[in-house]
Image 1: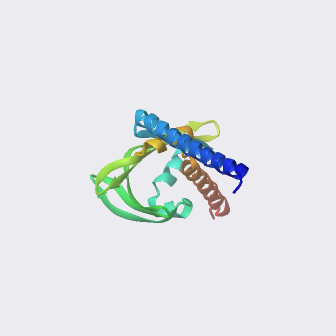
Image 2: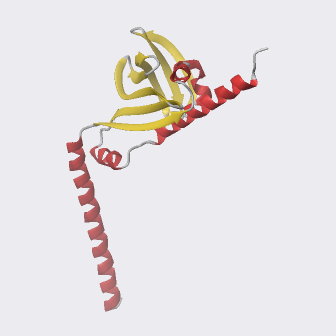
Image 3: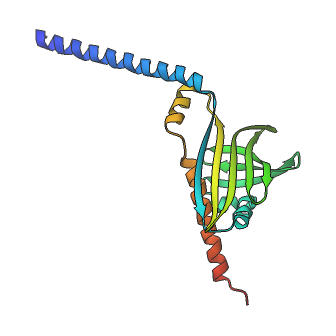
Length: 188
């Protein structure tokens, strides 16, 4: 091996070491920053639906019909009520979770929370329905706990809104389908 090849090899090794040190420094800084952020975070999304709040409310509380319009659910199993609150098991591609209605203020506010092993847990889904000129403005907020400090920083920089957007899109599509059903089935 000649002298120039040795220099090139040493330069590549040095560059690799610098890149590794830089990566570790960035991860350490993100971890320290993440520890300062706190473990609970809130992500919010909104949608404008062309239906009155009462209609949106009925669709949201139709637990047996949820698997028909929510694209993230494979099935839903009703469970016995816990402390007088409706409870169900959602079976999705990402796993299984037990949910319950934590609070309901018809037809303006619905709070759903995870209820694993009978104890309330996060995430906490809050749906607020506000009448608007052309229907209902639906605001969906999810309060979640993020344990890993590096993920806390990542979620702060790039909030995970895909699940919220999918839920609101599916809800909007269900309401459009419900309108077609009413129009296509006129009274005799």
